Length: 123
Image (tube, helix red, strand yellow):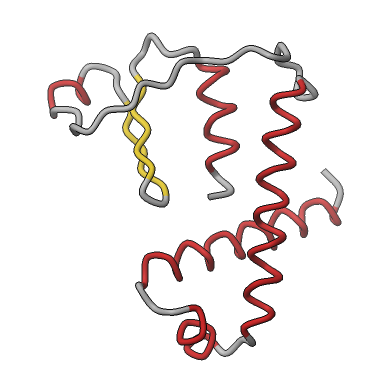
């Protein structure tokens, strides 16, 4: 990875964290921007760049440019209930990001989980 790419990844990661923190804070965008000392238009620029990166990553994964088979979808089961502690102990992983809960057992293909986590990392 080049220095430029590394800096871009670092910048996007910190901007995604900023967007997530603002979402979790419950503050308005204006109030949040004032609290961290940035202009509102800077926040929106960073939000736009984070969204563009997430969409680009999703398109790359779906087109198969990452070496995976193009056009293959994996079923994601939605559940309202939280997994029990027994489920978690039996080779399950539960990840929550921006209000989205992902739970996968040991039967879930690791390559698909990796792709899903890559896309979710931009949320």
